[in-house]
Image (cartoon, rainbow, N blue to C red; front, side):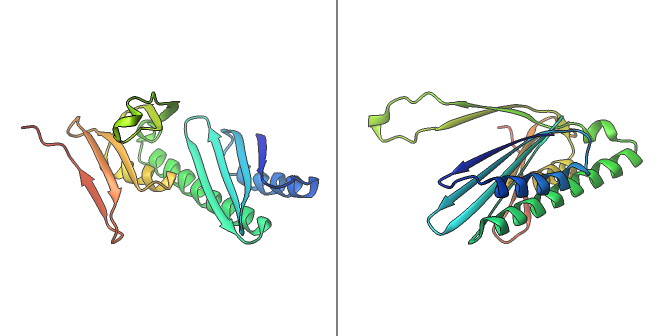
Length: 184
């Protein structure tokens, strides 16, 4: 797996780079389909932030952690990534056992493009980023698994039962919500 390390507001020493490479090697045993990893190490005042993005063949995993020590932040981010990869591996294994492997491969392919800014003087909200992605039918349970796997607070999907766009989301009290459109 190719690893790209970016350092922001700090000097990337050979010792720190070697530490990152050794930690990333830990993630490789979860899947043979990991293509490349992006590691962003940054210092913001007293915070040391480690962000890890691993691209697999059909899905992207993200983890971001902060600490007062860069090595600790890297450890926390890699541990979080390990949990995501382990959970994904278990989901795939479970889906294969239940003969629904085809549905487990329905992952989003996203592309981010800068938005065009219009009417900045009117005081309207400006969109800074537009995200486009392909969407495939999935069940509510699969959408919840995908949302938790990606670590997002919401997930938009095409409901396989109703053929409508739905959104699952985490509520402030920790429970889950489902948004279903209602045609008038």
